[in-house]
Length: 316
Image (cartoon, rainbow, N blue to C red):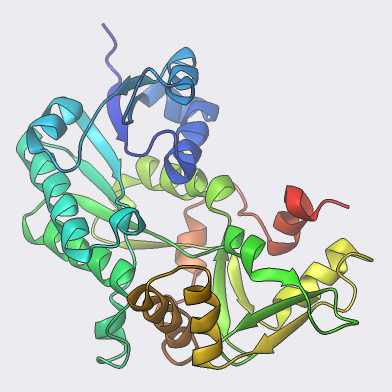
């Protein structure tokens, strides 16, 4: 019988969870210390079966059902957990799902819950931006986790580089090949993060350096880039394809109009507008430095230039 500690990963076949599993399996020290259990909706699906073939124990787990979670987390030493607000766009449901995970972790004696969280924008902005529900609900879950005494740390992913695949679009203003249009000044700093490539780098470091991170937040991003920097880097990487790429500040109603025109509900468009707008004055991470978080890593995070170079949509 294996004497390895069990590390449970929620969303095992998704972007974040898949990256965590890849990083642990590829690191000899982590793989020696921990066995992996992946939570997935259907272990019989091809993606889950592929993980099973790599030695991951795939089990079902329903975050809306504590009994299901108790079975899935039995014997776990460490847990990486996340929720998906955008699946139902219901902040109260997400909060309850997070509480379910926290309660079961406490019940089964989990020694390290790594929570995938975000900052409380309402609190950070002193109420100026009260509708960024997918941030605030995760922050409330973090507070609950700590209030009930579960040993924990919080992984805080930055702004996904992959968002740029839908934001950087062919420009309606020749001669600019691509335009990034957002409701913020050009000087707004954003902490960009390659979720698929780098989630595992940060979470593995947190897993292996438990004593250093307990009770702390790890800010997962490569660097702060201004939004004006983004098209310039795109142009440098893509040469002819990106020639003349530009950033353009747009107003609130224009931005929301893009979203509602694509079928998004009004409340969600307002939420995403506030998500963009709060970053200039208050900072995505509350203007905190990334230095300490980077000091935990043994692998360099992906730069924005490296990301642009590998994205299929933009291959020349």
